[in-house]
Length: 611
Image 1 (cartoon, helix red, strand yellow):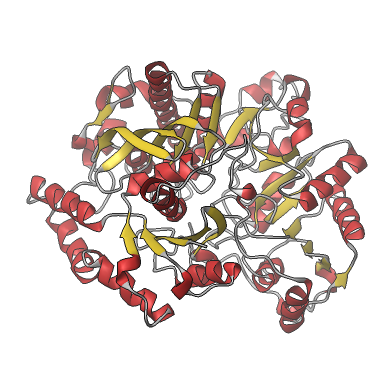
Image 2 (image 1 turned 120 degrees about the vertical axis):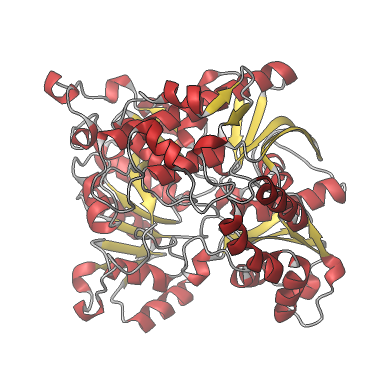
């Protein structure tokens, strides 16, 4: 057997992934074990987990692959600083000590860390893949396609910010690249910063905020900030940005262009202006992505598209690419950001360097993205006993029946089952669930369970066989990476008074039969639930459908704002006791809030640094 270990680390979202003879054994982000959101450190605990899952030691691993080439990245940083002298001095002064101490000599650092795990680790096992090759490999090699166009779009790797590749069999060749500082990911991050959200974690808030606004600044952006060509290639006007030379994303010129200062993080003044800016940058992003994908479909004549990179997590844009029809089929890597680079780096070595054969059978090889740790009944009860939890152990059928009834009764459920998901989305392994028919569920989950902004939307998990009856979608969407509209016959007609509302005032208007998962523009970020990849979750939603006629549940990640998704039964119990979750189901153990020792309650509202 041949084992390949992939690692991403030292920037954000460190992770480890393990292949055994090319098959994915396990993959997980370091944050889940350390409980530090977006943990960038060497993923020692994630590595320990993936090797434990395979039952091996580091000595048994044949190749270790890092997802980035540090010398190329250092070259880009030096050239950027030299090009912006003297403006870039402060940024240069802050970055250089870290580079000279750690990142420039990354092979030595990685070898040292790996020898902490296994004393005799040989550094000749260590390889490096280019950042966008790692992204592209993670998009193509696990996909269901024998041949595909592969598009990666993110902030920046070494030099590349956007790449186009062609994958066929076990081959993947990059055809063209767009280079720093011209970056769609950095454009989006700049407006996350401008609207008061945290860069590298708050971009999805901009996407969620966009439907509350109008894209009235789209033309302003395209006229002043983005020189966009017909084929989707573009250049950013650096007169308005500060990320090449400074410590912020935008500068005073951006404030003057929009006539507003940068919004202070966590301030209450989230106005219609910020919603319109969010809508505008979302519209520009969609325009760029559609121009790129239409051009690529025409140029290459291949019906399949694979996506990765942080921008591929923009499920609104993904949905529009699919509906546009330039490509017949679209597949998005569920861990599209840097964490997925660990998997892509390993797969790039396996297929591209070792030239191992690749087989496709019409399905992807991500196993539903359930690639993290699972816990046995004995492990679950042992952790719950040590935590002082009061629980009832049921057989599976009764557990499913009681959980479905609690959902129908309007309760918020903590659902912890099977293997943990790889990537940023909870997919029914580590989820908080609710009744989508409830008019108050969305607001309650945001404010009393997640402790986050009220405007944030929730996703529907829907039985795959029922998706077309409720949403304008015929395709699989197992990874919650496609947005589609609620069907017309499910919607509720709005009154003239309701239609006249602006901004956040739109939030409390009932828009459909499933208001808790219907966004203000009638869209929904859909997860299709498949019996073969998650039979227990499928059984729960099927039982809920039998009780209510609705084959859908609200699904959000099992964590509070700023906390990584729960990993262990202990994590789940603590979150349960720190929030207004009413029922916790871990394996076949059912815990009711009113039965717990009230002295174990925690204040989770301020426990974690805000995201």
